[in-house]
Length: 95
Image 1 (cartoon, rainbow, N blue to C red):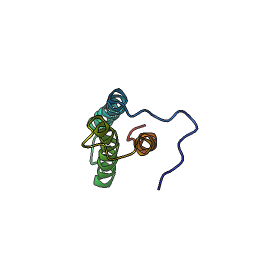
Image 2 (image 1 turned 135 degrees about the vertical axis):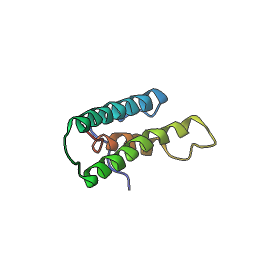
Image 3 (image 1 turned 90 degrees about the vertical axis):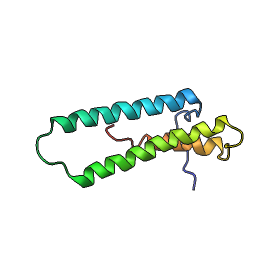
Image 4 (image 1 turned 135 degrees about the horizontal axis):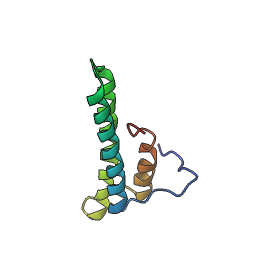
């Protein structure tokens, strides 16, 4: 099921855009890690697991966009990849 794209310009799926998404994810996870180090006491496992699973989704979406660079792997329409990049912005941890 394809969701309608946001009213703003649809995200590009070029390698530089993938790098930008992964950079944002890395910065977000780094910030979460620093906050966890400052926390004294126990941290809920369910919360940590949720962040890890969201992070995996946020990393796999941009990595799937790199498949467009090889004709042998290019099996997903660019519109689907663009919608994926647009949608993962809503679940990116720490934002």
